[in-house]
Length: 85
Image (cartoon, rainbow, N blue to C red; front, side, top):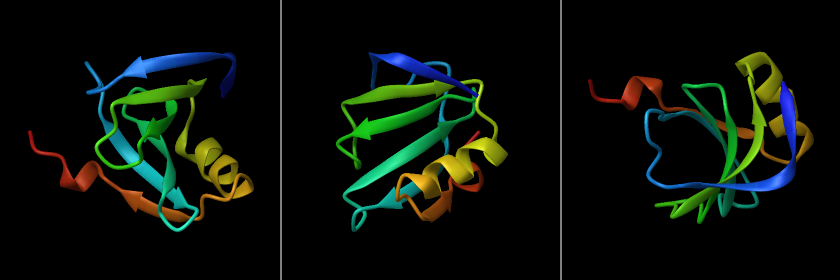
């Protein structure tokens, strides 16, 4: 996992990538997203995001889960099964 030190904004909708997992916290008003291309993002707003903040690159699920929990995002939703071909 390579955390990004500076503030990097990724435009929505994601191009050549998709959300695969979301961890919700703060009464579901905030979340973290792990993408299919192994990026950890923070969407703004949480639902129907207009942009994302890039938090880390090259993130595995086994790294993202403890990171999310440590930052108060405890409710996981797996989105891979919901994606259409």
